[in-house]
Image 1 (cartoon, rainbow, N blue to C red):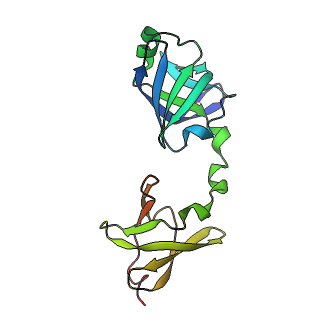
Image 2 (tube, rainbow, N blue to C red):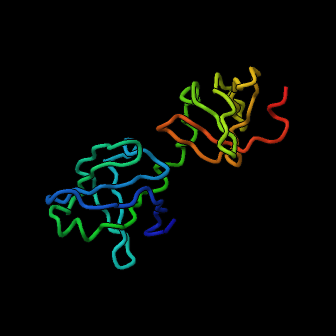
Image 3 (cartoon, one colour):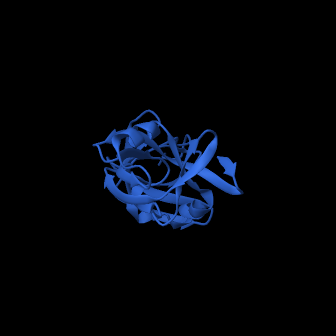
Length: 175
């Protein structure tokens, strides 16, 4: 996180490569999906240590975390090549409440794995306990267990395969 002109900037993407000759960029997004970007707000790329604002002219999602993006002022291959490998930032204040809107319903039907990569079972329900969201897992031993979704326990979330990998404390899944 960098501070510039009293704006807290958060890295949201990385420019992977140019695409074509008209300045289009392939970006990989992190901690935010491409369709969650507010294209009315500028994004920033650092040049000579200073954040330079760019507006998104177009954004076409490609997969879960990549997009083809046109930025203002980048209209040819030469301009695009100058920003390849650069980090892309946005105003952190735009994303403060992102976590509050997570829909646990999306996890129902997902596969849960332990830290060894072994399948524990399938998520069948959730209980949104304030400060301690939990999911119910139908284990492969035909036992339903309640497992906390604390951020310290989550090791990996694979949206493509609908799998979540957790460090599951000893005894939590015992019948």
